[in-house]
Length: 240
Length: 102
Length: 173
Image 1 (cartoon, rainbow over the protein chains, first blue to last red):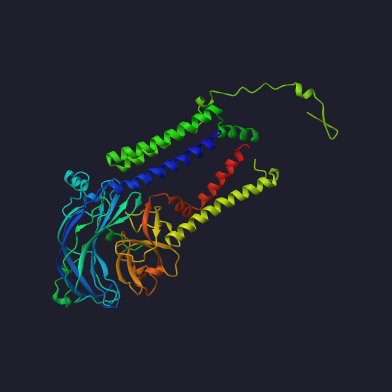
Image 2: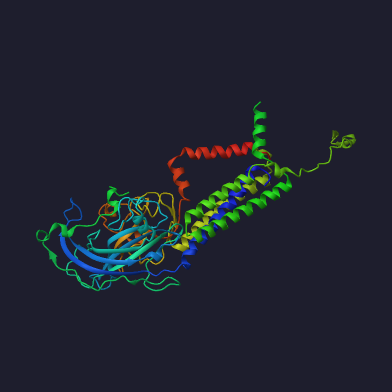
């Protein structure tokens, strides 16, 4: 500690140690905060059509278009260390080969921002949320209690297909709610079905088993029936 | 000229403090950083506001650096009383390899 | 002043040994973590904004590569065949598995389309075992940003070297 340089080095070194310890405490504090997530998800409509993966492709595939209702309360997932919750709904269906585990695909997702997170265009805004989030007290209240969603007849974000390109007439399909809690610092966590410490498993969050119908001719399907919802990331062009 | 400039630059960078000052600086940096860390966690957890944690931590660190790094006069209050230079030693004749050494 | 000739050989050797010790300790920690996580690169720095707002450029991610049964919704790091750039994206579909290879389709949270276009020519899915180097389990924000700065502004390296030299010149023994 005799010279300026040594004092600066020592103080900065101890600062990094303290910062690391505080970060570790913050990361651990999430595990003692109780979680009681619940969800009710219902199939609304499912259609299968033939299409191409993109406009310049010659490959023909079958796509399933699934609409659903969702009522969920995930507010306990939002602690002081939560940056966002990536919410998603998967369709899980048995594979054609009996040796393979079921396949699954995301049909809809939403980034639920925590109140501590700065605004980002990809964050999900529940239907009816006014654009003027800052000035509107009602909208601010919706942000202050995040994780509560009531969606009616929600369009999917993604039409899904299989590795084989065939999804028509599959049976035993299940829609499931999943999430990924993204912390400010620490471990990422995912949806659990069973209790883990003070974290309760997800109550509900799964539909009855249903089947994909046969392929519907494109001409017979009204165009708006197959519309998909667009997330904020849709405005951002090319993948990177 | 360049040497004199280098010397003065070294003096500024060196910022020597006395032994008592070093003990005080060590204690200050440890105590202040630990307090800032503890406070930032407790206040952040109580208010469930992680931004508060970040800011308390950063401000605490900045204050600590400010308090500890510069050679403040209070770190130099106990200068060491060195013995005065003695002339007597040079009177002795010490010879090494036939040469006089002081 | 830095004067190598004035250093005793023993001191010089001690300096070199000390430096070698620091390097080898870092290397051992890295390789040890690599063995524990079964991943060739257990810690990665986020290089692109394609997972925003979950991950920003410069965030540090910890990977885990044991238990290859990756589920939809997990975030994986993969290398495109023929290229050596690790990409961090979320799994949106999974097929196969069991006795055969598990196939994954990924998408960046910030990308409009899935990654089919990013994969190697003729590849429409990732092979879990061959392409993926780990699944993200831990997160520390921002601390990796210095590596991005150094690779993007090479003159910063010169500045750092200059500062180091200056402290050596300005330090008295």
